[in-house]
Amino acid sequence: MIRVVLPPHLRTLARVDGELTLDVRGEITQRSVLDALEAAYPMLSGTVRDHVTQKRRPFLRFFACEEDISHEQPDAPLPEAVVSGAEPLYIIGAIAGG
Amino acid sequence: MSKVRVLVGTRKGAFILTSDGKREKWDVDGPHFAGWELYHLKGSPADPNRLYASQCSGWFGQVIQRSEDGGKTWHQPGTPPGESTTGPGGMPKGESNKFVYDGVAGTHQWYDGTAHPWEFKRVWHLEPSLTDPDIVYAGVEDAALFRSTDGGQSWKELSGLRKHGSGPHWAPGAGGMCLHSIILDPSNPQRIYIAISAAGAFRTDDAGKTWRPINQGLRSSHIPDGTAEVGHCVHHIAMHPSRPGVLFMQKHWDVMRSDNAGDLWREVSGNLPTDFGFVIDIHAHEPETIYVVPIKSDGEHFPPDGKLRVYRSRTGGNEWEALTKGLPQQDCYVNVLRDAMAVDSLDSCGVYFGTTGGQVYASANAGDSWAPIVRDLPAVLSVEVQTLP
Image 1 (cartoon, chains in turn purple, red):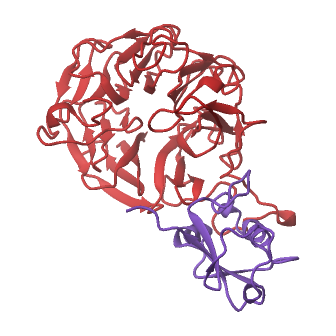
Image 2 (cartoon, each protein chain N blue to C red):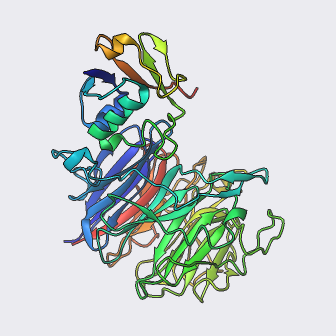
Image 3 (spheres, rainbow over the protein chains, first blue to last red):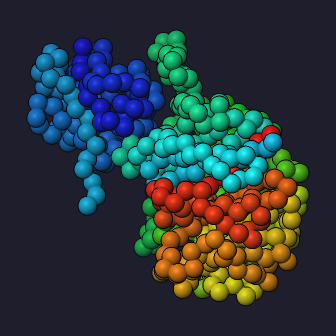
């Protein structure tokens, strides 16, 4: 199972507490995890990536194993620690403002 | 005894203010959707407990919310609380967040005159059908009109508006290129009016298939051709349901009136201290009584002289009186945004407006005197009122 940590506002929207787990088929990538996330929690469709372009929303970032992987290709494999469930994929709202 | 329910959208959540018909004591419920921008909330005239809300965020985009109990509880359409969010095969039951332009989105004009792709940003205004609680219209940025016929579960663009011909020449105003006003004609289900900043006002007479600009008579000195067919920065339009051919408009500058469904406008700013502003609304029982809140200028979005004054005309424009009783008359530098005024339909018409300073003011006597319902909300984006039995 893939562990995902959402930012607080999206946890409220999805009506979940803490981190969530997803059963992801095939290779574990940003795209496959987000596909599984939106299938399980359709209320999150469009909140992490654009409906049409499928691009990450500009003020969200993806972190794993203490690394910013936001600019990795959507189909690049996620780190083994995420695949094994040892580490979660963090979806984080960027700190923006003054 | 009748009740009123005031739906307030703010920069950091939604608030629901309720009172009995006296409108003296108020209950304040909220924030709903704390931390999110609530551009607009509105109830269905056909089912007052059915509410729609536009919830959005610079981080997470657009979410549509719906309530079946007058705002006590909310859910995203298609995903009722406590039920599975997916149907057979794992498909989502609803796609209420999904606003996708019809066909090739194309381009509009950007601030520098170059072509810029149409990009959905947010829903500014939700207008439920007058007769069917499951039909609702959404005015969005970048400007387009969407309609849902399944209670907000899915949305389809009425693309005849954007593709009627002038779309590539539309350009955003300072607040973005938003479709902010939607008026449904109660006497003619085929007729809808909308307004866009900074394209102008438009009308359909075939339920949204085809549209025409209705901006003749508007004069805008800040655009290259001041009397152009499109390009006018219309801030808000209003119509009284008993006279659907009469429209009032607060333009960027100028308060305007049309007596022929927008075919021709004439200025009725009269003796206003400034004719810049955002809101305009009409008394529930007197279609010639209209309200505006003059704002100093496009560069200084606050009331002239630090005095918050609603202006009322009982003559359909031109002759205006300042309404000041109960409103701050010194050191007041708030703004009143375009969707932040509404009226109730009790015998003594109530008038309500919200400010960027977080106050929501109410008058239970058609504007003669005012009192704040709340003083310290986040900046108010929209105010709607429901009169309940």
